[in-house]
Each structure stands twice: as C-alpha cells, then as structure tokens.
Amino acid sequence: MTNTPYTTALLPDLAVIEATGADTAAFLQGQLSNDINGLSKDTACLAAYCTPKGRMLASLVVWKAHDAPEPVYRALVKRDIAPAIVKRLSMFVLRAKVKLALLPVVVYGVTADKGNNALPPSCLLDDLPASAQAWQVTTTAQGMFVAAPSATEAPARWWFVASHQQNTDEPQGLADDATRRWAADDIAAGLPWVELANQELFIPQTLNFDLIGGVSFTKGCYPGQEVVARSHYRGTVKRRMARGVVTDNSLDATTLAGQDTFNANAPDGPVGRIVNAVNSGGTTHLLLEVQLADIGQADFRLGNPQGPMVTLAELPYPIDPHD
Image (cartoon, rainbow, N blue to C red; front, side, top):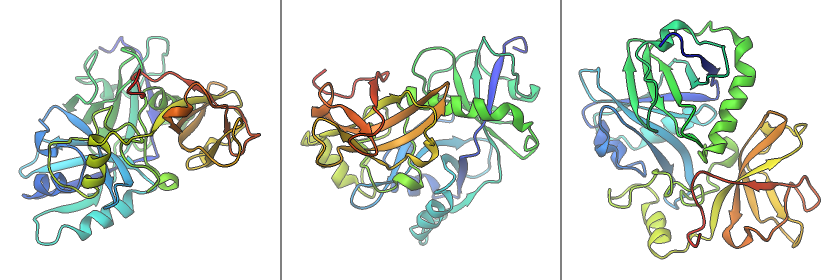
C-alpha cells in the first residue's frame, strides 16, 4: 500500500454537515431526493435538496457513520452555501430529535495516480482500498473515505474527511494545481455541484441527477418531489447538463457559474447557463445547461453571442434519451 503513489488535493470549497439524533434518518428521508433509509454503513449517495418548486438549493453526498451510539449522518456540500443549508434544514426539524451542525473538519480529494509522486500524509493511506466503486465508503481511524465517481475506471478517486483537525497544517503548496485538477475530474465525471451562484436555477433532472443516482422515484415525499416526479413521468425534460471546454485558460472560471450561454446561430437570447467551471491544464472545463434539441446544432458561446466558443465534450453517460 505504501508503495502506491497518490495525489492529494485540499478541497477548501467543500464543507461537512452533520445530522445526529434518533429521528435523523426519517428527517433526511423527508427532505432529500434520494432514499436515505436505504443507505448501508458502506455506501454513500448523491442527493438534492430542493425548494417546493423543485429548484435545487444544494447537492449533497450523504453517508451514515456507524461508529456512534446514536444515528449520525454526514454530507458533503459546497462551503459557500453550507451555513444557509444548515439553517434552512433546522427550521423544519420542529419536534424531531435531530441536531444539525457544520463540522470543523478538512476535506481532501485523494487520487490513485501512478504518474504522480506527491504522496499524502502516511496516515491517509491506512486501509485505503486499491480500487473502489463509486459511493463506496471506507472507514479508518483517521476518517472516512468516500469513493467519488470518475470518467474512467482508473485512477480511483476518494473524498477523504478527516475525523478531526490533525491535518489542517497540510502544506498548501501541493494543493493549488491538484485542487483544480480534482474539480476538472468532477466535471469530466459529469458530477455537478450546486453553489451560491447557481442556487435555485435547476431542477434535479436538468443536472442529470436522475441519470447519476441522485433521485429516487419510489421513496416518497420531499420538498419539490411533485415537480421532479411530474417531469420524470411525463417525459418533459427538455434541458440537460452537458460537458464543455473552452480553449482559453485566461478566463476567470471562479466567476462563470450561473453565467448565460448563447447560440451564435440564433443570438436573440441565452440558451442555458454555466453550472460549474474550472481552469486546469491550459483549458477551461465546464458543465453547462443545454437544450437537448441544440446538441449537434448550436454554436455555443460564453457570456454573449460573440463570446468564447464552447466545444461540447463527452460525458461518461448519455444525456439524450434518444441516443
């Protein structure tokens, strides 16, 4: 194990929400889009937290901690929305035995990368499996490893959540490029994140949550469930999330989420919005909302009809039901 090279990325944009108490599973089951009751101790799931109109307030990676005397669930969420999500969820606890809080922990991305000798601290390697299916959870004395989806079978990727703050003084110099690469790998895997700039813009199907295991259509009610179910059963999803690249690394990707996209062939108005973006490897990588009818037809542009050209790239799963 110690001879296997890994790349470690600090992920300062991610936070961890903890929900504890006897009624936690039932509470989360009634708030999130996925089947929380169906989680085992070794699996995580993707879930959406929506408004009553079905618009996404947050995307979360949820898992159950099994080393606690009472039910404990934890969730990865974007840090810029985390306090507001805790506050909003807490409003609906009412008399349920549930407590919600943000944890003061560090989140890392760990990639099994044979071409990179930047090893994480040795403690991160304890009990780390050589490979893992997406959403598999591995518990160690140092914290939780949650296997992240990937565009390809290799290299394997994990989110690592330290059980305490012993790693907060991790050298920052290794983090910058690795952090951007991790975000680019999320985009290549077709994994979207709801952040402050794109809150309440999309329903789960627009962000492909129904295609990547983020929605259960049999679990029962949650905020927005009627809208999400109607779109699913009536086949009215006309917009999906695609992957794109812009060969201009000078763009400030941190400002792109929520920005409009245009079709230069029909420039009268925007045709979608940027979901997530990052500069990595000399390229700006994007997840963007598109109309299914525009795929293969539109000349996508960023910001305005004469803006930088966006070239669509493949996702590891099909987004057009007619493909």
